[in-house]
Length: 132
Image (cartoon, rainbow, N blue to C red; front, top):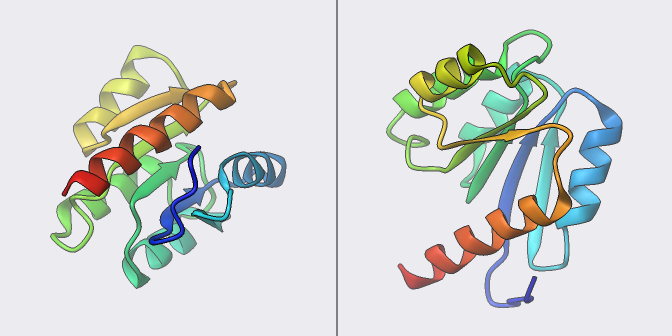
């Protein structure tokens, strides 16, 4: 990823597994990308509403409030509805994907995921944001 010191790209990762939080954070953080992590759905919801993010990566299975419910809440709120939200989960049955899509998810990344897939998504969204 090319570093752009002018403006950081802010990502919210909502994931209950510490190993995956650390992996994604270290994979994507490069000085111009800032990854903020939440360990459960309630914390993720609070963080998403507390400051602007350019991308939200959300697990489906989360403590307290599941990712599909958090997605539905964020996509129904005008303040957060335009933030790209991608589910990052091992739940990959068609019904799971359909449920997330119906809740407003912009994409679905299946675990185990490829690092190149996540980095390409961030690069694509950063390029689109810089055009605006």
